[in-house]
Length: 320
Ligand SMILES: [Zn+2]
Image 1 (tube, protein in one colour):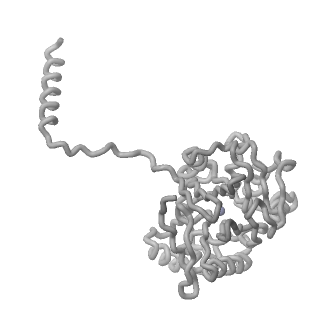
Image 2 (cartoon, protein in one colour):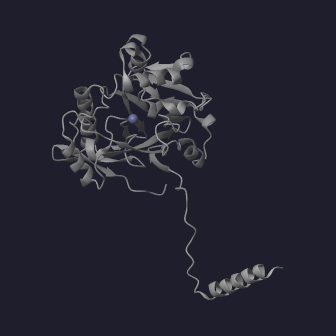
Image 3 (cartoon, protein in one colour):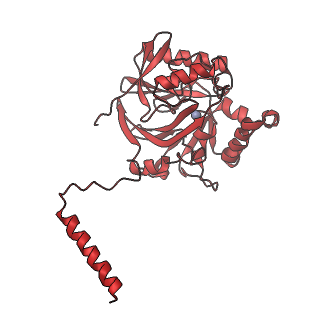
């Protein structure tokens, strides 16, 4: 043993002796991952599971709301304790266990929208469910953050045993070559993406007419405007009902409080406002449980009237 090594050893053992003499107030190791994003709740005989996919901190510019100025948007973000010029877009899919079927409404981003999203399959696993166990997938609309989870990045089907249900007018719009040829920029990318996801699944996808029951107790609701065939869903079980609002209402601090605001991601602003007001008013007047894909996790709660807008009252965590 060299003297250098011996000295190092002596110093190390001196350190150990000092450390051992310290009082036992050691901190726990700092976690590097969040707890699973899974929240279960019930509606009548149905069990619902909110499955978190992640969040995208989306920069917004002055034109984000067509009919409100940037200062008003920043004021509302500040009132929700959020920084200016950035919109947190959270993604939470809803799994419905009817007792006989597992129905998944929308599918997450598959990690293709932001690095901080794409955890849906991990959370499905944490909920104890394999992708192959899903019987039915219901799609609200064809924006990438709702359909990308149908496939892996390399194009393989994820939910290998599921039938896929999509709104007929949504299919008609996005799969139309004429519509695609007139699209530019982001909209064109959405057309391309819809074909990437659905192009080779055309024979397997079942299209439903908005208003139709898509699975036992799950009734689609035409809520057009966000996209031409965008649908929300009413879920009924054992005398109880709730609304899965999809993208009718997105960030609640902006769009429940200001339902008449027209964000650029609503393709038809006035039509989307009409759908949003009808949905919020139904939820408030019937005191219905609601959930929405972009609400803060676990993305469920109630809607209360507040001035000429509405307020999300988040549901409190409950044991089953
Ligand atoms: Zn969305």
